[in-house]
Image 1 (cartoon, one colour):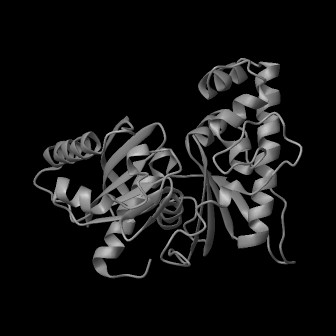
Image 2: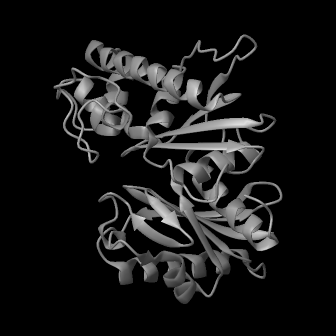
Length: 302
């Protein structure tokens, strides 16, 4: 079954055609995320899908799945917490609009949950029953999958990344949750740069400097990894995953440096969760969104 998967990030939107039986991305398009204009967003998605259709003809697409950074229920976006302002009306019917723009049945969920689903089915979580996914990028996403399905239909725990991590963190700017020192404030791109005390203008610049043996960059990354280890520890005690998968744009940068996320948490005697980078890389959300759509079309439990 060939489905469209869309992963809407704070910076980039990825649209892919996915064979949902194998998890293979047959074709992929990436463009800057349109944040303020609903009409332009729908036109861009429709045009991109037409382009994918032309590339893969005579194959046809069965359905469309989409992940967004926020709370979405039955295709209606409640909030993206400012990441995508045109959706933040309190009742933006995203899937209805996408169906009108593309003609495809549309199914939407939280982006981090779909990353978890993709990795559980075809990535670093394959063969593990309980998978926790952390996505590191513009923000921090948290998704949990058990037996390749969600524990509940709605992404009610989508704000899990805002647990308080540092009580004395005056260095981090206040987050959308109203706190400073929450996990997202520490592990998002801005949090990584805060660790470097303003010496780098972007995560890419910091990672490049780290490859050149910059002490400032190395110190910032070590502080970041310590925070990540603490977050993994806290969530592992709550979710008791068999596998923790770390994905997102910042994870790709860390992986390129050869560093590994760490954990030694055990929530019970025989519990030894492993931690790995996302095997699907930047495409995990696309694959997960397509799998979500395929499951919905088949009436399978998700």
